[in-house]
Image 1 (cartoon, rainbow, N blue to C red):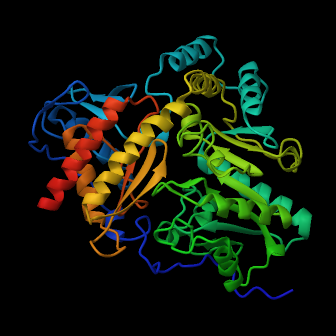
Image 2: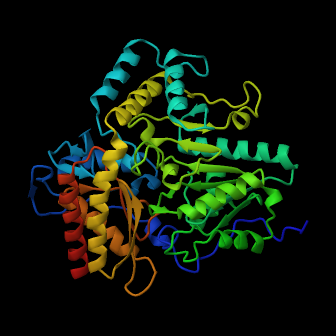
Image 3: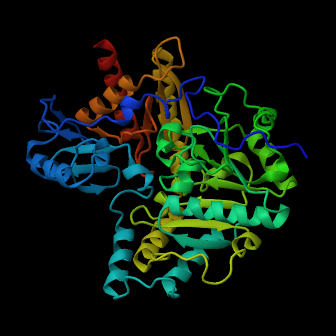
Amino acid sequence: MAARKQLHPIRQGPLPHPSPISDNRTNMAREYDLTPKRVPRVETALRRIVTDIPAPATIPILEKLQDMEPVAMRGQPPILWDRAEGFQVWDMAGNCWIDWSSGVLIANAGHGRPEIIAAVVKQATGKLLTSYCFPTEIRYQLVEKLAAILPEPLKKVFLLTTGSEAVECAIKLCRTHGVRAGGRSKNVIVSFDRAFHGRTLGAQQAGGIPALKEWIVNFDPGFVQVPFPDGFHTEDTSFDYFLKCLADQGIEPSNVAGVMLETYQGGSGAFAPPAYMKALREWTAGHKILLVCDEVQAGFGRTGTLFGFENYGVVPDLALFGKGISSSLPLAVVAGRPDVMDLHPAGSMTSTHTGNPVCCAAALASVEVVLKDDLAAKAARAGALMHRRLNELRSRLRQIGWVHGKGLVAGVICVKPGTKEPDGDLAWDVVRLCIEKGVLMFSPVGLGGGTVKICPPLVITEEAVEESAAVLAEAFAEVIGQ
């Protein structure tokens, strides 16, 4: 067996093609100005901008938040949410936006969904707000529902709180399985550059954005990254290139415990080719390596299928869910093969708020809405229209290098014309201008230096898709014109 040459994450320095989610340190430090700006008034059936932005009436609260919260919280547009329904968000001053954020990909079933509100109220008024790991009927009902709709072999379900927590659990399971299958040297976790898996220690080491993990200093040598086959930053999308990149780092398959990837890359919306994923699935199975799909941003209809991995025609050994599973409250899931999920003994894989009763009630109601209303199919139809409009815009503008995504998730990659160099200034200004025009997006600070991220609730109408796409085109035209 050849000796491993190195086991530190690759590409701690700049990528050969600067990535829209790892470039431009200044983008990570940007803050929105709280000085109200005079903007054109907007009054349509779906959008309403009737004040300066940010609304003067909201400034006192925004300023107090800045005084009391860390600077790290200042990366999002200064829109003080007051209420949200369906695919729209209002502030207390009467402004209304079409929401292209889903509250960071949470509100799959729509904001303020009555069925979810009713389930939360029923559970809360039943006087059971928490239970630690003690069994509850509502936890049973949610686990049973998830096990029923997940494909084989993902038939054991572990409830947690956040996507990062689910990722940490997956790392633990991969290494435990690897060591038992091949000894203590079988501990390497392979992931992909430009990936985002969360903000905790293990999740950031598995992530592929060097600037986000400089704080770690002492890297675990068992985390390595390879290029993600998006066809834009990485032009070679063959599985042979995956194998070559591992070999170049001295990584033997016998030392790999798990391969983890976002079903699509959250920062850009990029999917891998289906043939690549099928080859990866075959390779991992042949070497007793666990394949982990991070579905935290992809699950429950977002990509036009119930689960994002269905786009590839493969099923992973572990699937991680969060965000859109509840369309509201914090809840995450690790689902996997029973033999893998049962690797740790009783009491050794717990979490304080695992299966919180109120969160379980919200998630169960949300999943039932997604299934009943066939929101995956609706996302596919509305997404086809959205991607058609985005690609029409791309065909007209040299400043758009690529449009990634499927269903109701997209990443519009802004570049300096004639290059693949991301244009973080353009993306930032386009997002800001869209907000001033009544289309609300979040700024993926540290993830999307050159990416305009689009991810509306799955209940968005085709009329709203058309209107918001037209706003995006206006914003690009105005920023480029300046």
